[in-house]
Image 1 (cartoon, rainbow, N blue to C red):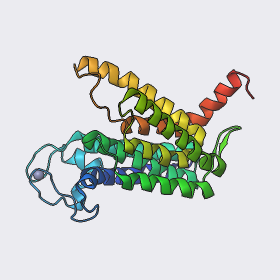
Image 2 (image 1 turned 45 degrees about the vertical axis):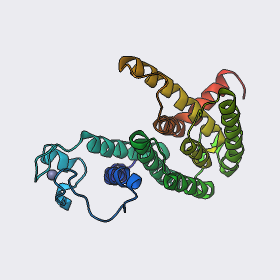
Image 3 (image 1 turned 135 degrees about the vertical axis):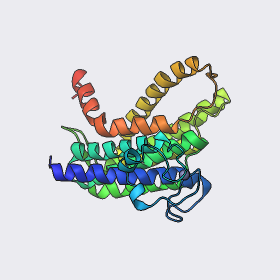
Amino acid sequence: MDVFYACMFAAFGLIFGSFANVAIHRIPKGMSLFRPGSHCPHCKQKIKWHDNLPLISYLILRGRCRHCQKKISFRYVFLEGLTGILWLASYLAFGLTPLAIISCFVLLAFIILAMIDIDTFEIPDGINIFLALLGVISMFVAPIKGNFLTVDYKSRLFSLLSSLLLLLLFYVSGRLSKKELIGGGDLKLLIAAGLFLGWELQLLGLVFASLIGVLVEIPYRLLSKKSLKARLPFGPYLAMGFSLALFFGLRFLEWYLAFFQLT
Ligand SMILES: [Zn+2]
């Protein structure tokens, strides 16, 4: 590990985390990501660049707008910090490689789509297309290497087949139970993420996502007295499941295969 590169990844993560906040706010409204510049949601005053530094400005301004003194939502800082940490993790896991850089943007897309899904119950097509593009690029330059398993272009192309099987499975079980089991945006996310993760990590990520979803939603709904049948934004769980699969999936699969002496 090189401290300089580690700092660069973390710093750019903070900056792109700040961009994620803008994207989460503007994409569902169909607004431009770049114009106009940032402004306070309460008093509409433009935010100067020196008040718009990730984390630092929040601390200096003590979490309040310089003009109207209204509180700045903690969510902004949280997402900036989270992006910074995930970008650093990407460098620590994959080194200074094309995979590390592509992973950074995949994780950024995951954060943006998870939050938009929570806010609006939709995953915008544009983000899934962006993910699919990253997946296609990764086929040429960014294998994911474990000790003896590798996600290469074959595994990534093969994910189109596993995606097709999953689509069929959700379609048939949806028809049988007469319910929509998974949203259209979630299915597109499954296909797009598969192109980057390969079929093994795509399926493992889906399993992780379902497990986290059940573990979080059931206690949460019981405690908050929300109906267990209320609609569930699955995007955030898919994003978490796929992220875990990206960082730990191959190691988990290798451990699993060795444990049952399948290799
Ligand atoms: Zn203000």
